[in-house]
Amino acid sequence: MNKINKTLALTLATLVSMPALAENINTDDFSFGGRIEARGALADSDFNDKSRVRLNGQGKHQINDDVTAVGKFEYELTQDSANVDNGKKDDTTVKNKTRYAYVGVETAYGTLTYGTQDNAVTYLTNFTDVAEYFSGYTNEAITASGDRAEDTILYSVTKGDLTFNASANLKDTENGGGLMVAYKLLPSVEVSAGYAGTEAAEGVSDPSDVYMIGARYTKDTFLLSGLVQKGTLADADFDAVDAFASYGFGENTVSVSYNYYSADEQRDLDLNFVAVEYGRYIGDVAAYAGYKVALSKDTSAGHGNNNNADEFIVGARYSF
Image (tube, rainbow, N blue to C red; front, side, top):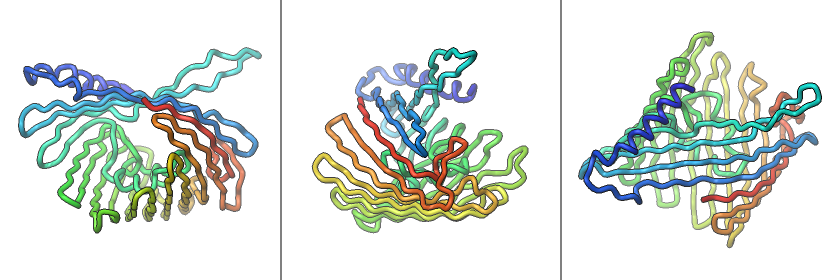
């Protein structure tokens, strides 16, 4: 947490000190935003509140014709479950998680940033991590392939139809990194391949890595995408498949997602489900509902893990 706080402090300090870099500051370069989201999930007759609040700020400042400074932070706040002691409930507390806290520079040769941020392969895993709730389950077991990581250096460059990302995870217990390349064959068709790996850390005997390929097709309001992964999680080989399709009509969107993950000797991480969701979007307001059908033999929820259980989700969101 100290490292996160230091990174966030550096982000804010950099943004605040930008007036020293130029005589004139365009206030439109910095913006605040976020979302308030009320959600509830029902699995095995157990209801769990999934509500959250996200607050973010991001900015850019052109230092000169060649270099632009960038920075971003985002916090996610959720309610902590109240504890019961001697028949009395504690006051509800708030848990916070840093999703983003980074600074860096943009140039004609690409963007280089450091902090808590996306990994290189996040661009690729976002092909299928699109649903309101039931998607993006298969890439989080390895730090270097997760959506975000602490103490990370990310280099990204796009030239025409080609995008290249490289990242390095510098946290003591999670050293690793990844590479990703994506290419648009057509304006509607993009293919991508990537690799991510995390070195063996203290107390972990073997490293972990993953190879992945993906593709997506977009046409008007229709999206079809797929992601295939194969790798090693410590001493266990694993395979994973994600697929996603959605169609929008008017203010409505319907989607279908499929998530599959199977690791030898790591059965507690297994996934196998298909989910259907419906959302209605009116300006900054969204309301949605979805149902997940578990395809595993064991369809019970346990230990706080509902991956192998049928699950219903309903939610509403206001973005600002």
